[in-house]
Length: 486
Image (tube, rainbow, N blue to C red; front, side, top):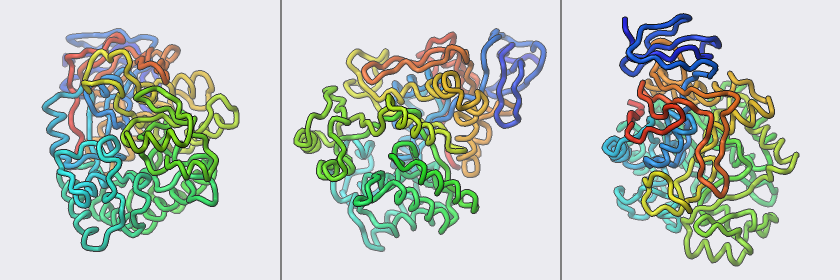
């Protein structure tokens, strides 16, 4: 047999089988067709000696679903980027639009609870409801509790979108904390019946007892899993745990020990990014818990928010404006150790929470124009994991970092999404979604001021097609495919 492509001489890491050895990988028809110790006959052979060949990274949490956003993620080694926390609605339309435009990496969506509520209770047309965070942050109806009849309408709409292929249900509880707890429990019950996960931004993220706490928010997710049997996922456990990561981690681990199905993800930064109109940025809340508004950077102007009055002004004038929020000080030893504890929580996947670019008139401008701003996690999360956690700190082994970036997210979805059982692995029959990188050089370069792609990533293949070759993005390559639950 003659293969279409052979990648020869790399250190091949397959986190599922434990393979960690020099091998040659043969690829044909978009799948891994052979893994051998010797050479393979191929139409094209690429020498990747001295580098690591691993499953392509799978990002469970990416709001950067534009062509530009996905190109930046491909340069960070990502081969599948999914919008599961905020989700989309209607999912059929989002899938079709992405297919028609073309994507360099694989993509998929959950059914959006927030967008469903916007449509049903604020009258926002479904074809106008692309972005809850930037476009409709100030609307009030979607945040309000509803009665049984409206709840039933909401559940029916979510169920219909799961039937159309949504990968689960995405619930932005933290942006609508006034909604009822029984509604969330009914969503978990629906997900259990449909056999799909629920991806939740927890209701609370505070740490002061006079406020609702992050532990309370996490326990609500755990309780829904325990009470319904649903698979529940806590998004960005690093930031929503705030300074209560030890308590949240204990609750998660104890629940798992009792057989409760709750999974977690985190990104390796002590700053978050969202919109200035988010409920948890209310000036009165900042005043009560003693958080300074200067921990917020308003990205459209690049300014540090100087006062509570300025914060209130921005929330009134531009509630959908993107911000970066410093919830930990990465320069402080104690804060940095706290961040590490969230990242090292057992079986926590790496996920970026990538955001769309700010300051770019055309969403798909390439190359990224000067003046664009975005949280560096949007294009550096995975390289930073290997640079910081593996090479510099040694708190994760190379193999464990690969597992948390590829196999673990695939397994989180594998029960309900058959396509994910072929991803996150380097084995015969798996999809040829692969990343080749130099373990001594892989590094993030993005900063809070500059959109600069990661380095040290030599090749990225999606469905057997080069998207990045010799460190260069191939802008004509769009082999990404939709990932659906059905």
